[in-house]
Amino acid sequence: MKQKQGITPFTGYQKIVIFILAITQFTVILDFMIMSPLGDMMMKSLALKPSAFGIAVSAYAFSAGLSGLLTAGFADKFDRKKLLMFFYTGFIIGTIFCGLAQSYPQLLAARIITGLFGGVIGSISMAIITDLFALQQRGRVMGFVQMGFGASQVLGVPLGLYIANAWDWEAPFLMTAGLAIIIAILILVKLRPVTQHLLVQHDKTAMTHLWHTIAKRDYRIGFAATAVLSIGGFMMMPFGSAFAINNLGITNSELPLLFMTSGVSSLIIMPLIGRLSDRVSKFKLFTIATIWLMIICVLYTNLSATPFWLVVIFNVLMMMGILSRMVPSTALTSAVPAMADRGAFMSINSSLQQIAGGVAAAVAGMIVVQKTEFSPLEHYDIVGYLVVVISALSIFLLYRVSQIIARKAADKSAAPEEVIVTEAI
Image (cartoon, rainbow, N blue to C red):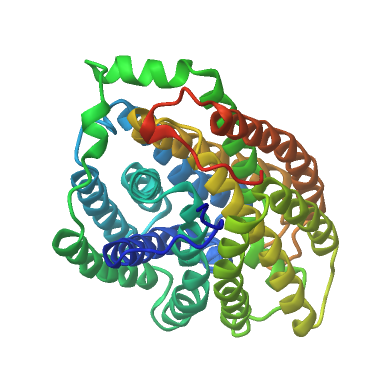
């Protein structure tokens, strides 16, 4: 009897894996996310122009992208648990250095170190998810794991802002590193080795494996979709707090509440979108969410001084669009690679995501202008229009990805481990 879509239960161990990966992602996302709300404080403290701050944000992304490309060839040749522990340890060290930085060059160096290690963690987690969970489970898994995005805003970012207001901007990085140390111990104790992919790995060298992964046309379409998605997703982020404070009239004391409200909404939306993504067409869900986000971006970036309650509503609506396209797009992309290529594919995919995000942050830094440290940001609306154009392109590319998955689902000659449950895409 054919099982209904979207109701495949999780085992007890799978629930533990979801929890471990979710809290791991929480710290990695928090480390990156905290830069935006601290942006106004850091720009004033270190006397940075928007372009310099954009470089500080993109330094993490570029180094993360480089790291992913360098490690992609090795990603399927080791136990994924050992890889996760190695890179998470480096991430912790880099985050500690961020908290100890006392100048812009030191901060820049610390962000590069953190990116070299932290940027690979997401791809390793994705490979683990793809190895341990069937496609019809992954929407829910992505929904829970990516709740780290919302949790970082509910718990991490507001707490980090309060700590920064009390002890300066360096303190939140030390807080994140302390939490990450506890999580690293949990990974070491609870996560089992993940080695199934080693049984189907046939490439003799890392470079051969990397080349074989890049050479596949279907994979390149997936890479392009991820890169374009990331450019659109990152472009507005670096100057979000500076725009809210200097243009919309939000105070520093209101900023934690703004992020907390957005985060609470994401914690509610994420599981719902995850379940919905396993039951309906992932591509259609992504398309609707993208069009929604395009409308909200244009309206938001053209606001001037605005009542706090209205800014909160806009941020919640924007969060709905961001998360409602993040879950289905990630789940769809995860179905593109074969088991033997998943580590390499996810590493390259993560690298392109990070590099594209770095390009987006740098480009936004060149577009946005602030004449004095307390004057409104100019040209932020242009960033919003660019997001619309890029988002429209992302719909076309993810459509191509959905076609690839449909073809794989219909291919009766696929290897047993690669047979994908037919779903509405």
